[in-house]
Length: 409
Image (cartoon, rainbow, N blue to C red; front, top):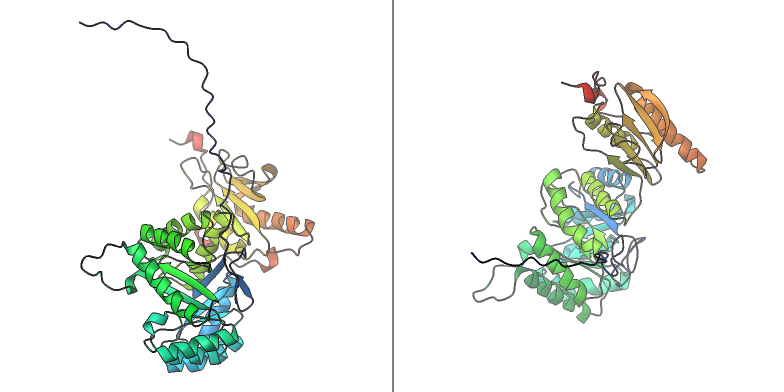
C-alpha cells in the first residue's frame, strides 16, 4: 500500500475581495438615445421610463374607449394605444383624441389610408410597420405628413410576423427580428424622418432579450420594451418581468407595456411594479408583505389584499409593510415608512421599524390609515384616508388566531 507523507503547510489568511469592480447597487446608467415626444410625454434621452397600455374597447365606441383611458390614467398609465382596424375606427379618432386625458397612439396595419386618417385626427404617435403597408406612394405620404406634424412613429416588429425561415437560413430568430427592424428604420430614414421609436417583441424571453441588446447597439432611437402575447395575469406578468427586468437593469428601454390577457389596468399596475422594484420609478404605494407561514398570528393574506386595495391611490411614494408576526415584523421591514405586524388577535403599528402602537386586529387597517394621514400632514400633504378606495376584500378578513404560534399543536 502506497503511503503519502503528511506535509503541514502554513496558509496565510484569505484576503479575496468579493466585490466586483464597478458593480454598485441599482440599474446601470440609462442608454443614451434620441429624445422623442409623444404628446407631452418625453421618451428617451434620460426621461423616466414610461408605462403604456392598449385599450381593449372597440375604438369606434368613443364613450367606452374614453372610459377605459380614464381608468388607465387613474392607474398611472402615461400613453394609451388604440386599434384602428377600419374606417369606422379611423373616423372616431378625432373625438377620442379630443377627449383623451392621455396621449393617443394609433395602431395601424396594412392600409396607409388609416394612417392618414389618424394624422388628420392629430394622434400623438403612429404604431406601424412600413413594410406591411405595401404602397410606396402611400408610405411616402404618411411619413411626409408625420414629419410636418412632428408625429413620431413606432416601428413595431413582433416575432410572429417576421415570416417563416428560408432553407439554409443561418441567422437566429433574434437577428432576423433586428434585421427587419433595421430595414424598416431605413425606409423612414430614407424619407428624412427620425422621430422613431422601435420595438422587437417576442414571446420567447431569451430571443426578446437578445434582439433588444443587439438593436440597442445598432440605432440611436428610444426602445419600447415588451414580451408579446405574454399570457394571463400571473404567468404573463412573470414572463414580462423576466424579460424586461433584465434589459431595464442594463439601462435599456424607454417605454414598456406588459401585454396581458387581462383588464389593461392590470398591465399598468404590473408595469409600475416592475419599474418600482428596480428603483426606476417612484409612484404611490410600494407594498412590502411577507409570504405568510405557520408563524403568522393574523390572517395575513387577506389583510395584505385589503391594504393594497385601500392604499393603491396614495398620491405620494410611500413604502408600507404588512407583516405576519414578530419575527418578520418591524425589524425586517425597518426601511418601510410605516407598517403593521401581527400578533395574537392584535398587531403592532410601526414607523421606520419603531413600534408606535398596538391595536386589535379588527382595528389595524384603520390605525394604519390614520398613521399614513399623520405622515402626509407632517410633510405638508393632505390626509388620504377619507379618499381611500373601499376594500372589496373586507369580507375575507377573519378573526385573529387564538393560539400563539409557538403553542400550536
